[in-house]
Length: 150
Image (cartoon, rainbow, N blue to C red; front, top):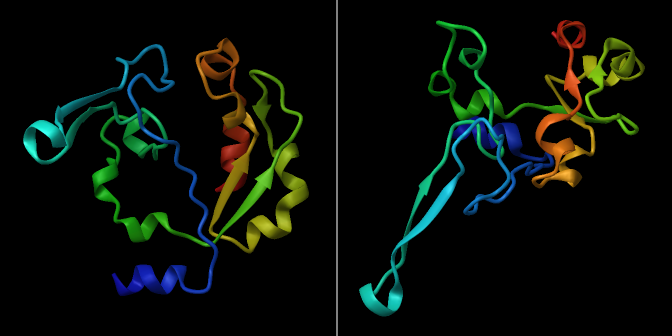
């Protein structure tokens, strides 16, 4: 825990999470997220809820095993490994289905090199909902851009 505190001391923390709620936006290939009330204060003297979600619902980290058989799963990482000095790069003007390419990132090369993580803000979270663009046509990081970042 002390290493975690050391990493965040003096830095800014950006909370990228979206709320989890019943039938929140989710990819159509998955079962819908469910939040059910199990206990209520008036009847039981306490409140509890049951949450049923996929590892791909809401804000999440894709482990290598998401796309590669036999690769590391998310439980193989400690939270310390996921908290890193980062830069936020804003890529405005991307259209539905656009591939993020090295040319989008190269103008930020100096700041990318000075950080351990890169957060790419496409503005797409502002479209969050059940619309076609959000569910199917998001901008994505192409293989060349992923290799550029590595």
